[in-house]
Length: 179
Image (cartoon, rainbow, N blue to C red; front, side, top):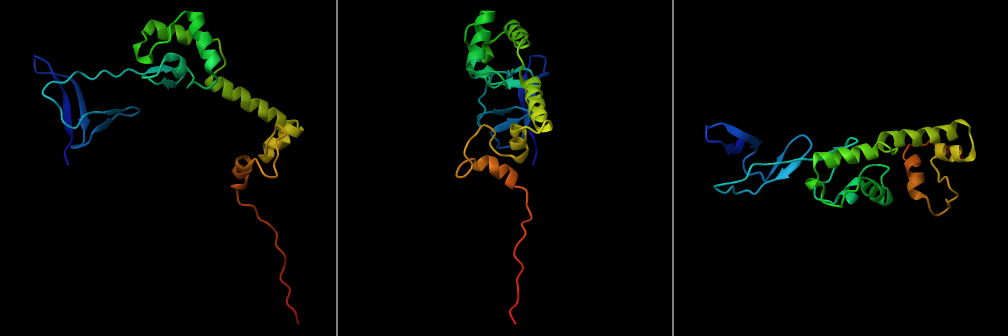
């Protein structure tokens, strides 16, 4: 089975862009991005232009508005996203329509917040501190049980299951023979 290469030919005969796909497939995939194309290529087609906004190692969805797209970053919620847009004076438009200058402003504003890796590390260190000092919350974290006073008799199944996934050896009764 041969690969098909499609692209746009310039006047001098050189390829401007080329994409390789298996015959009959409607999806052409690169390392991180899948792009769908129609099965029947028309006689003329536009050049492919893909641009993903990447902030703090997270690719923001292109088709969503920036306020919603910012919420895909760990540590940024609805209120924080609105506050960031108000601070830099940016209107809530679709992510793919943002210019490089606007993306730079957003990156600079996000550098003032604890997000992604820094926030995850901060939370992990706090939990580890509780485990190390062996307080009640630390023991609950270590045991894999709910920490904030929730019931465990009929609830907390998900939290318990994460710990019970490991096989535990349970001692059983010895069988005795009657003579």
